[in-house]
Structure formats: C-alpha cells, structure tokens
Length: 347
Image 1 (cartoon, rainbow, N blue to C red):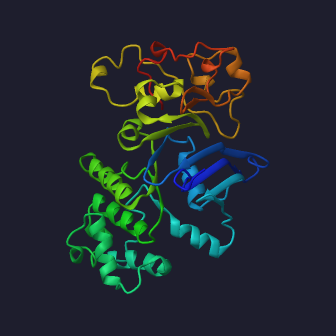
Image 2 (spheres, helix red, strand yellow; image 1 turned 180 degrees about the vertical axis):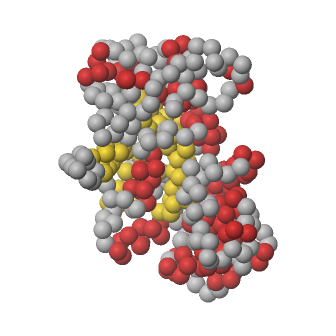
Image 3 (tube, rainbow, N blue to C red; image 1 turned 90 degrees about the vertical axis):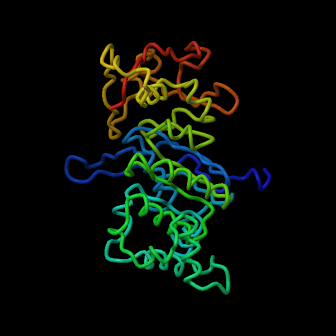
C-alpha cells in the first residue's frame, strides 16, 4: 500500500459494550458497537448513516478517544494507537478533532470566542507555525470559517452569536490543532434549515483546501449523498451496507437502507403517505439483540435463515457490500423488493 492509499484514520473490528449497573443490570451489557471497520482517507468524506441508537455516535466517540473500545484496533496513518497514556492521547488529539452536534452546548457560555480559540492553540502549540503571533492565528482561523472581520467576533460571547455562527466557531476551534481528520457528529442537525447547506459547503471547502479526512455522521441519508463520496449504513450497532454514496442511494442493497431512503422527504409521496404506510416497529434492544440478522424483526423480506444466522458482509458489486442474505446465492435473489417497504418510516 502506497502512502497515498493509506488511510489517515482506520478502525478495525471495533467493539464497544457498556456494562449496566444496579441490581437489574448486573452482568448485562449494552452491545452498542459490534465489529465495525471503516477507513478515512485524506481529501475525502465518509458518511456514517443510521437512525437514533444505531451506534454511529459511539463510533465517533471511539475514534475521538472519548471512549475506549472493548476490543478492536484504531490506526492513525497506519500506526496502531494506544490512548491510555496522556502524552499519546494529546498527540492523537492533535491529529483527530471532533465537531459536536450541539453548538449551544459545545461552547462554554462564560468565556468569549477569543478564549475558546486561544486555548487549543496553547495546548497544541507544537503544531503552530513559528514566528506567527496569536492574534494573527486567531484571525486566520475565523477567516477560514468565513467569520469576517475577525475583530467583530473575538470578544463576543457564545450567546451573542447565532447557531450557525457558533458552529463555525466550533469548527475553527477544531482547526486550531491543525488536524488531519475531522469527526463531524450531526454538525447541522440543530441548525436552521436555511443555514445547513452553508455549513456543509464550508466543511467541503475545508476538506478540499486542507486535505482533510472527514467522517460525516448523520441520520439524513439525503445529505450524505450530497456531501460524501462513500456511505456506511449502520443498524443496531453493525454495518449493514457500505459503498459509493450515489450507487447506494440509487439502488440500495439492504432493506434497511431502502427504509432510510423511504423516510427522506419526497414531493412525489406527498398526499399519499397515509395510504398503505407500513409500521415496521422500533429498533431492537441492544442489551439482548435479536438472533440472526438484527434487522429481521422489522424486515418484510426476512427468510428463515435470517432468524438464526447473522449474514456476513457480502460483496454485491465492486466496492459495495451488504450484510443481507438476499445477496447470498444460496438463499436470496440478489435484489431488494422495493414494493415491500413502500413508504415505511423508521421510528
């Protein structure tokens, strides 16, 4: 593998179990992430998609070092990392930064914007260019996220900014460490619809100019298609489909992916959503996941094998995999029956 092909950040077979406390939870665990492997490459965006409780935010916390995996391996630039030591963790955080979902909670209301941006500059001082003053670096950071003129924002407090401006400050704070990887956990879900596209375009511009590897976590598969070259679909802690975003959204290979697509706004369905709308139930408990395929209790295409045996990741076309028995020559037809899911919505 050449240096250009090597992932900036790679997760191999990540597993995360959270032990339950109390009398009722004794000896039991929440199996939040099960055998998840993904690769992030410089200059590219990978989308991680799934409904609430699918495990996508837990994957982000594992990759950011905020949680330790129960098993599995994380590699930065091809080198396995051990984040249990403080110095190793600080070096890692200089390369991998996270943008949180809530711009109202991620900034401390008692400190101004100058404080929020100066602190990471001091923590990661070794990553800063020599001979450049702090004020110049602050101005460059705000200019990178299109908050101009910088002097208009540096002495303001978070409550004096709009939600979109706060999220841009959070992005600037992440950039202060000069990372190679950005983990964006639902970065636009709490913003007004009118400004979401602007923030996505900003992240895309930064990816291009700074050659960043970006993980874009979202429940909106439509925005994943717009923003990311590749998409990974998660359900109940597992990856169920992976492939180029355009192919995956045009011809979903897994019934759950089709369910996500059917839940996206579609003008063609307006006025007839109530007719024949299917209720496929709620996501399963991750304390006691279903046997076999975890999606089978909600899947209208489920076969007997789905209830007893968990399917492997099956290659459905070059660069695309789906964890579904429909694509196994010995069990399925290789196609997801579109009519079965209709306009069903995940709850």
